[in-house]
Length: 190
Image (cartoon, rainbow, N blue to C red; front, top):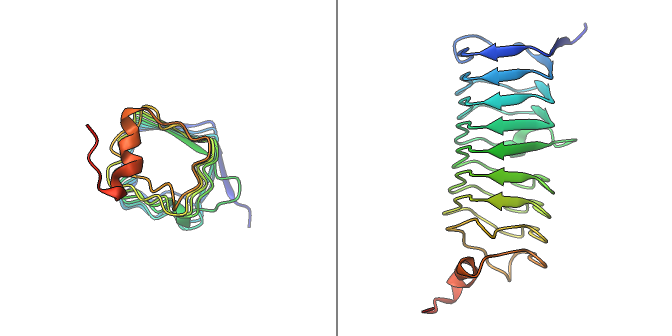
């Protein structure tokens, strides 16, 4: 049985929580103002696709493949990216709400997050080497045994990172952001 292949199509204002997303491969497709909230996207492959102003909150991502994906202005609450197929996982995020999501052990080397809300996101054991967090809000985000080497946090804010429990060699922080590296010591900085 051949796998469904959908290429270079634009899907606009479709509520996929009411209409089933067909299992197959979507290549070069654009999804605009679509809702995938609580939808099962398991075993679907997305390659070189763009999601603009979509709601993917609480979607199931079991063995979902994201290759060269751009998420722009999307609501992505409570997603388990750690359930995705990790082979060739590649995505960029701009202006997205990714709160309460998990990237546990996901390879995000050289990936970018720009103007995103990443509150209470789990980055435990994630590879964020050379990743950038431009104007990102990271309150309550978990960094535990995370590779942050050469990561750029200069314009990120509200993060707490334990330098003793994470690899931070040559990571970049702003002078004001250094407080997030010292919070565990319960010291007063004036």
